Length: 152
Image (tube, rainbow, N blue to C red; front, side):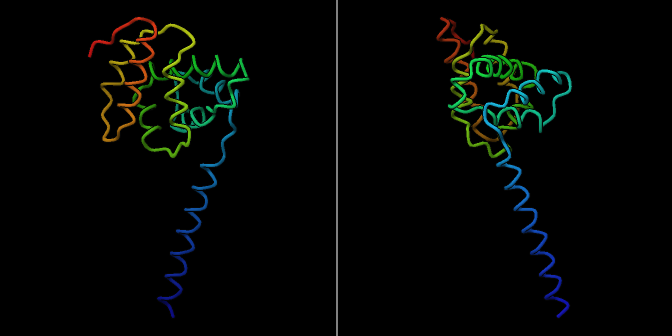
């Protein structure tokens, strides 16, 4: 009887943790300019949660929101430049459902950036997953569109 109660408690805790994680993952407002503002305002003290909350806002439906589209694209590149390790860590560890949209954003920058410098910073990030390679490829494509060849 005592063993059964212990098992029930363990299952209850496991279920609670699973549900709270699922709920947390779905708590994302697409095209949320406030998340862009939060990253912008805390640029020198970014956290995993801030970057995750920012990255999850990207969506194809945001194309009609010019202010969000332009500012979020610019901030995405600035975060990649300033915090490449944190950005890749978020991509590796989060369960974002918009990875392809983020890669498209990286491939289509609104402003000119130092693609070579950003590429080199991302290249230095140590990770076991393939998100880094996808990000690097997207930076290469962005540079190519500007007539720049990335030196590997």
